[in-house]
Picture 1 (cartoon, rainbow, N blue to C red):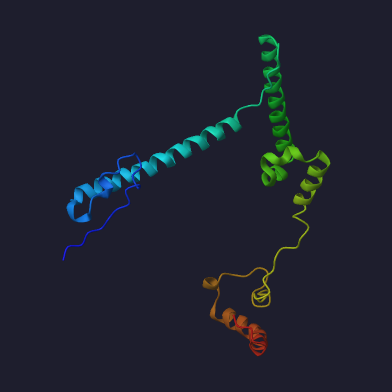
Picture 2: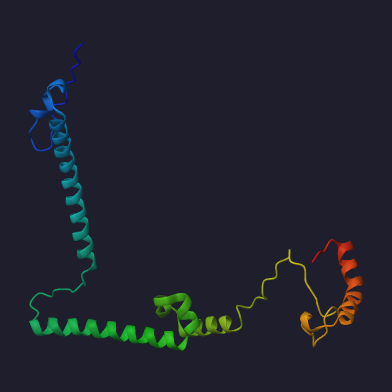
Length: 187
């Protein structure tokens, strides 16, 4: 039994549709691979053309907007360009001064620091200097440990204590350890 398959003759990308109309029984593996490579390269070319068009649009949007005034002399256009550059340099200098004056705000805001007024930046800086106005986070699942009852303020390292000192420490700690065990707190 010979199986023949018809391929859509309009499926070619570059106008060569004669290859596509051939039955699958008459084509070699190389011919089929060449056909699909050609078809895929057409898709790749279309994709690359779209990417190039998008890149051109991005570059056009990134280009500095300079208005061309009809009848303007080249010197006036150059003066306007220099004025724009001067304004950008002043803005950068102002941003750098604000970053130096308000380092905590600059660390959080970055380049957006120029959008806030100096009063708001000073308030933010004061807030950051006080620690954010919050108490430090305490994990409610961690039991507080007070070892001052076991070891005095001038505690000796365990390796330097004698047997009698260690036994005295255990006797002092026994009631505390037993109370904690009754409450379900284990060290």
